[in-house]
Image (cartoon, rainbow, N blue to C red; front, side, top):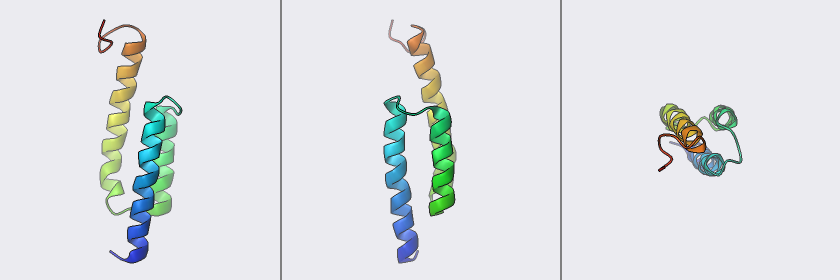
Length: 79
């Protein structure tokens, strides 16, 4: 892996770390998270990012489902 590719890999992971925090804080939607991730992979072309992208989307969808049931006082809400 060359120096430029390594720099792009780091940029991608730093960006996605902050985007994930924004998602968890409710500052962005799951759809926005997915769109940002897609654009980040297109821009930075991370070697490992493509491998982890599907995992990120799956985690985001599970979290979205958990937050919806929590808001309704259902399963996962602790009530």
